[in-house]
Image (cartoon, rainbow, N blue to C red):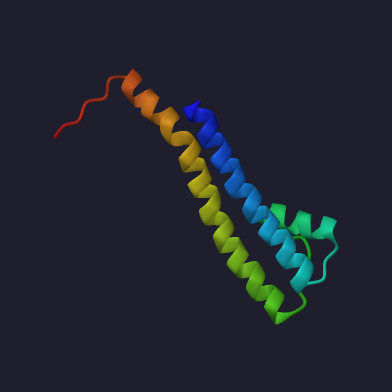
Length: 98
């Protein structure tokens, strides 16, 4: 149950950030929902935006969103992998030296 909960939390984090990105692209740059999804998911996946931003507000949003995406992916990965790595360390009987 613990690992499932960590996976759910990680997926929710990514889903919320994806939704925020879609809304931002749709409202600020007037992209269609499918294009907003494409741009947000590509940034969230680390690939970069597909459409060029036309407005200064869109460029600012895309830059901030890209930074947030990087942090969220690192955090979500850490949340999910922490219990797995904890078990691996115990399995190899790693000892504290302190």
